[in-house]
Image (tube, rainbow, N blue to C red):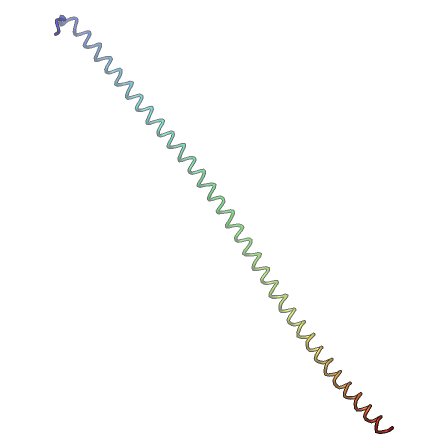
Amino acid sequence: MFGIPWEHAVPIILSVLASLVTVGQILQKVAESKRTADIQEAATVLTGYKEFVDQLQARIDRNDAEIQRLQKELRDVRTRYDEDRRRWEAEKAVLEYRVQELERENSRLRQRIEELRAAQGSCA
């Protein structure tokens, strides 16, 4: 082989083959390290994504709780408004009735005054 005696070539070939195996092992370890790093990076991304989603869900939950609180407060305000309106309408009706009574009374009193003046004028 290339002018090298066979007995000298065999150790050289074996040494080259061993180096190739070592290089192959190194390349395999590099590839495994890269896969491990990629997996770790993906896990980190997924963890960050999960934390972000959890934060968004927590915000949604807080908003839902606030919506429920505000809806209850709105129902309470409407109830108070309706009750106040009924009371106001009842009070308004009483006051309007009283005004009408007083206007009728004033009308009767004015009429009575005119009757008295007419009677006084005929007596004079």
